[in-house]
Length: 404
Image (tube, rainbow, N blue to C red):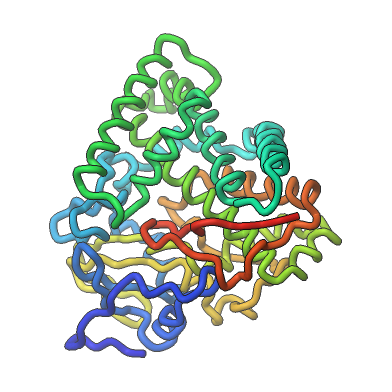
């Protein structure tokens, strides 16, 4: 497949023909046209699909995440997508402001904290599986486990009452959609979330506890910087988007991959030491990660064997990059013991996912608990019947029917 400058841009996203297999266009573009012109709701972008190109741009600070920059293209026609709505320069900018913000927040995601959090996550998983088993099979594992667990974890980290988790789930869903909600609906949802969190932040000023918001309110860095209220709000928003929706989707799709070929599940039952590498491979193998990450460039930059002109918005396909046969042997296979596994599902560089340690911990714990509690777990429908929600920036299964 090739796309020349005179041709019409390709309509994007590409049709989803399978919930567990990538659109054929991604491999074709990666091999024949790694810098492809695509048409999205907001205009025209350049889609990058090769591993080296995607990784290069992720680490190049000349490419900005701030799509409010003049000339940048939004994913949605009305700019309601999460990439266009972010307002905090600390979370969208490059340079010292972002580095300062990242240093402050990253203290909450250390290996020590993740280890301390494991028992709480395990207890949540046990409780959710208890409830699912009580309801009986078949059951929707997505609705009853994959989605409730991460939202409970995020609410706990932010110090938000558990009874408000459904409101958080709704706000996240609106935030991560690019086509389902109107601008008015998205703006109203954002206003509701902002009002809630600003009130929550003020409440934590008066009555701090052992949670992320309370911690950031009093924390200063070596230079004496303390996070402002607007940055706290955007931090909460970012954690909700990245820590809930993406992790929930990853848990569901990981389970679907392992059950689609049940020899994979049996291999894990026989050797639990494979769980860690299996989680990493599920992250790499997910060829339906979502639309991709947009970046904007204001100067000509050579990427791979082509120049990306100034004024171009590029879209980075981690899903395509993670199936690049020049980097991954047997790239189209799910290899449970793959090591090393240099996938870029969480990005690389200064804007790599800050919550990746949390996501890995949740995925690992959930998989361990499922293997122990539900060894006979299997899909309740043929894998061909699994469907994807195409309205989300990060692609999710609409449901995951299972029995045990």
